Image (cartoon, rainbow, N blue to C red; front, top):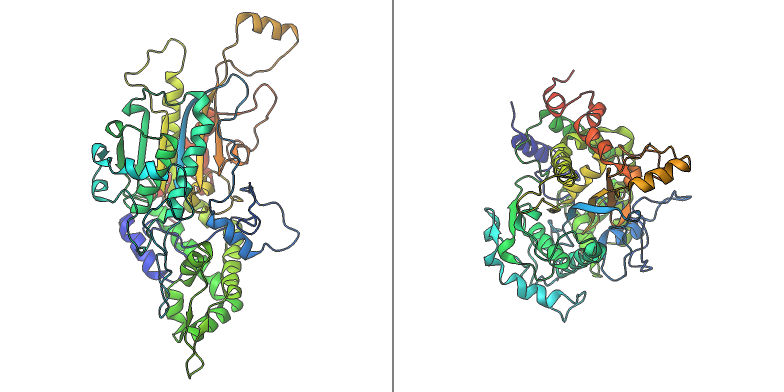
Length: 509
């Protein structure tokens, strides 16, 4: 049987010209569906579900939303609940912040971006200076191998490929600070928090490690390094010891073939690549292999002119243009629509994200049980805050697996938050009063509920497991049991199975 790693490598080889979705390829270099006008209008809030369009979305406007430049105030709905509900735990997955390109365009100069950190350079943040100082003490923390050898700060005057930029650091300082403000009144992590109460995990890439540390510092300024253990996830799917799944690999291969067929059928895209290759004086297939959208996006997000080369006698030379960028973006938006229509990616996502979702469900159930009346508290407390620092190839399938198919593709520094809440205990007097009013609500006292938020917006009732839930006044949140049933059984109905093992190892045919 072909191992998951070998299968992923095979997929990468046959699809080098595709937008990568394989877990082994660390990034999907720009499949943004993040709308709004972003930098153009400086909106204070963008919805994660696009408002139905009366006309085609503007690819350039959506690209600015993907950049997520930290130049505006954000409103976030984390930490909001009905009165007297108690917040029991929070689990957060982040996508790393703004990074330098993973690919360079042949014959052009690489973008001139400084990846060292300086409070004198924009964008900056009030916590940046103390964050830099605090990272110097990181040797006091505990690091799972190989994370101890990964730099805790970006540190190159000329960015290396894929390196986190200062913009990326600031994005996550802001993210962490936002959640610090959202949760401080709930006393989620007491000032005397124990190592058991905080779980931090990341892939081995410097950009995810550094993004996670920036987020954590914004959330817990000047945290005690000696209490912190940073755990390593070897797979971008955060699947731990449950990564082997042949059916997942097959769905991924089929999805990549669908993606390829759609691209080669797009004549406008082909003409655009031919024009770009002619400008640069290279073969069209070489340009495609260089994945120019990745580098062009970096230019756009950092306000840099698109690459140019000197004019030559053979008609080569000139600059790559915004209209060419827009054509590639338009095709990617078309691909998102086709991807949802066909459904192969959703099947891949269900199997790809089950291990992470199962872990999330188990943690929530454990915390919920420990909160029951009469339970003896566990020594050191329960794990109440989890941070997983990941990639777009982690978060995109997570959104799909949850049923959030219409959600915008993860922008730089995107976040998904799972909150666990408990309803207040009702006294005997309140019960009699309620009965006297003829209230026949079936809501149970002390019940536990889940909220799911994406980039600060509550998307709980868009998820598969709560879309049909009756949101009556006495039970305005989604019961945790809905999520547990979804993860442990219901989600596999999409692939005609009742369990992860059954779905992964069933023979095709």
